[in-house]
Structures are given as structure tokens and as C-alpha cells.
Amino acid sequence: MRYRCDTAHTQPDGAMAWYAEWMGGPSLAKVENCRLINLQGEMRRTVTITGEPDTWFSQPAECSIAGVKVRGYVTGDNEGNFVFEHVYY
Image 1 (tube, rainbow, N blue to C red):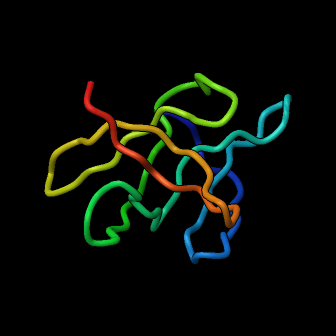
Image 2: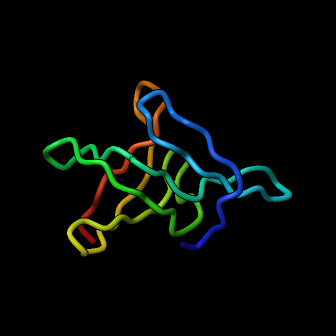
């Protein structure tokens, strides 16, 4: 993990979003039980944030599936939940 987890917030879909408390305000650090939206089977994993936000609506992140690190980004869905979408890079 790159960031510490100070406070938690439960999302409407049941996932737990953890935040690091900084002088500038809270920053997303990880999401436990996060939905993986573009993988088949409605999988859920713990997703950790790996860097600063690269756009207004997403943050780079990674999760582990079957022992393999899968990289992608965390973004929001229509219901206000954080979700993970993997990318090929």
C-alpha cells in the first residue's frame, strides 16, 4: 500500500472506502470489497490506490486476482459507489 488508512466510510453497495487524512483533506487510499465492473462474474476485491489522481474522475489503482496484480483505475458509478476498471498497459 502506498497510503495509510485513517478513516473508513461504507458505500451504498457494501464496499468500505478507506481515506488517508492529510492537511489538504481526505484522500482515497483503498476500497475493500470493491466491484470490478469490466470483468465477468461480478467479482469483488480489495483495491489499493497507487498514485495521485490522473484525471478529474479517476485514480490509478491495482488489485490482486489469483495472485496476479491487475492494474487499472478507481472511478465512480451512477449510484455514487467507487468501482474498479482494469486496463491493458
